[in-house]
Length: 165
Image 1 (cartoon, one colour):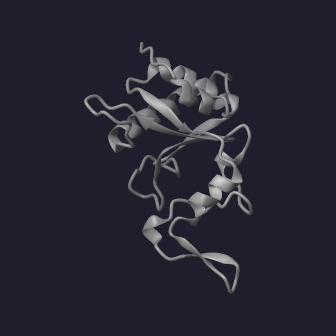
Image 2 (cartoon, helix red, strand yellow; image 1 turned 135 degrees about the horizontal axis):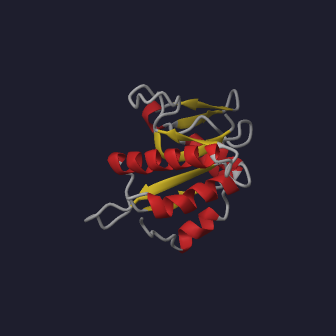
């Protein structure tokens, strides 16, 4: 059993989350071997649009954003016309960072985020089966939930979201 704690910044993010995510995170603090921080929960439409613009520029003739750098694109959700899981209040998604031993800074290190995500998805499954939460969890490193971590078109490994099965 672990006894990780949320810092002040993580608590602010935690307060923006759907109660099912809060329940899973509370369990994760005790059950996940890798310590973590909550990076982002609810995201207002203006912030979502900032992320949407990455790798795009506005075509003034059409009034639409067009991709100019595919590698820089991080989302296809603009927060206005299309809402993402972060845009709900309370938020249906959370982004995490890992605390990695012997590293001074928080990280989006793939093996550690994968471990955290697997722990959270299993905790979520357990709690869902017990009827303690009403949603399941999906991870941004395995969107289709088929176990093949190499077949995604977009990776968002810090991202966990709730969904109705």
